[in-house]
Length: 408
Ligand SMILES: [Cu+2]
Image (cartoon, rainbow, N blue to C red; front, side):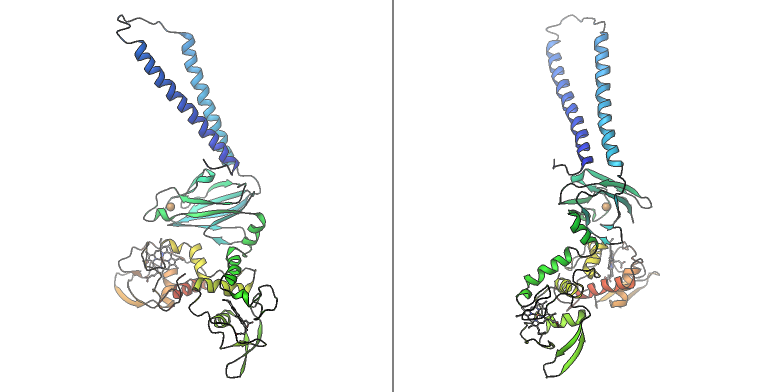
């Protein structure tokens, strides 16, 4: 058994070990007595049957002893059940939404994620429900298992004593990709959690690492200092002049497009006061990394809209749609944008449509309107996403389209 991270889990283990100990003891005792009796009372040793009138002492013993044992089992079971069911006051409430075949977690303040992130030592209450069928939220390391039922809110709570990562599984068979319903419970120090909740999460820490991984930090400082090139932090919204190769100049406002150009075609616009010595990173940085770095340069450590991939993961798209051309439970996102789709409308008629932005957006908001031929219409409606979120998802799908750049 893994170490005990959660006080209620140790109560569960105690109840389990107690019952196991008596079950093993009873097995050994009964087996030993059976063997002894079949030897002791064998007919060769006892040719005459003997009448045994009974024994009050024995009767009492085998009534009272098992009753006491069963009551003790009940006591351990009851106290561990109570410990798991009694949510401490002031626990942070996290919404859990199960759906085919992924999890979504909603935190106070509205942040959503596909992984469950919690502060070490903090009481966490889970308010769980399902969008489609019955699933079951299961964290073996915490001995925690609770069904999630459509239309009903079930609860559970825990408090993790040490940082770590633990598996979250679905323990209720829920269809084709049930086995894919795995995600991670990450317990992080309080301070990291607060930063993560505010949006300065692992993605931006990772972005910081990306700049050194791709060698940018050789020329750029990330903390405002001077290098061969301008500092890269908090560039968003800044205006300035750039020099063009023909000697002209242009006034620019730093936005995502400008930063993309600055990385992919640095010779075309040169920041004033610097040498044109930055190499081009065309085709060298996968799209997802590029997006993460651009976001970091624009917003620094403050919360920015997560890039499309992160949103697609948080919304569970990736449990049905692959990015490598394979079919999970729906068409792959790879090379989808711009391709010709054969779809069936609600009257059953088949059309050919081009997967442009409008089609992709509609497929997300109202997937039942046009169903791809040969596919089962199991995709949930994402009509609660706002226009900006849909646009971000569409952009992500487009980035995986033909000529859409690197594979994340
Ligand atoms: Cu499930």
